[in-house]
Amino acid sequence: MGLGFIGTGTMAAAIVEGLGGGEILVSPRGAALAADLTARFAGVKVADSNQSVVDGSETVVLAVRPQVAEEVIRELRFRPDQRVISVIAATPIDRLREWIGLDLSITRAIPLPFVAARRGVTPIFPPNAEAAELFNKLGTAVPCHTIEEFDLLAVGSALMGSYFGVLETVQGWLSSQGLSETASRTYLAGLFASLGETAEASSSDFAALRDEYSTKGGLNEQMFRVFAEQGGTAAMNGALTSVLTRIRG
Image (tube, rainbow, N blue to C red; front, top):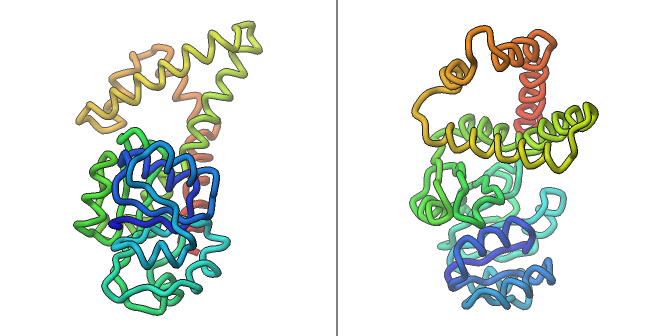
């Protein structure tokens, strides 16, 4: 088998779905998801154990939670010629090699759930041709040449909850003013989706786009000005710094 997954959780399932099946082994951890994947995609098989995944794969994807990663990985016996891709958050390569006990080729990656629709933008470190080929099939791979670059993109990936939190806050305010939750959700989801498409298609930086979408003296300009004056941008910078500190700590 070409690709094997240690840990069959949401991220492993998203990658398999994006690939549409193939020569893939998944571990019995996460039995319900593993069974679903084998039922939906040809070529996907559930191994008897995590060790069976390692034994039967050329490239092993480590997709377990950080809290149990050491316990799971130390029990496995890898081959010297195997490739490893780790999607375990905030776990350095040196630590993974220590747990594995071999100086293997290891690439870290930060895939997001959008890989299931082949719309993922996935940072990888260090640059690796096989890992880049995999994640280019699932959207776009972003090779990072230093761990500092990779860590900063990991901070960016932590914005997903905040994105929906902003929408939640605005929807709550609109509803408190009398707009129905259905109308506010439909409008905000469509508005932000369109803005995302605009940013993706544009070569302009975000400051230029903000100016373009903010008429001088208009409502959009007022909204961002008040947001910044009342500490919105400072709070965001503080949150970003706190996440980076945790990642590097």
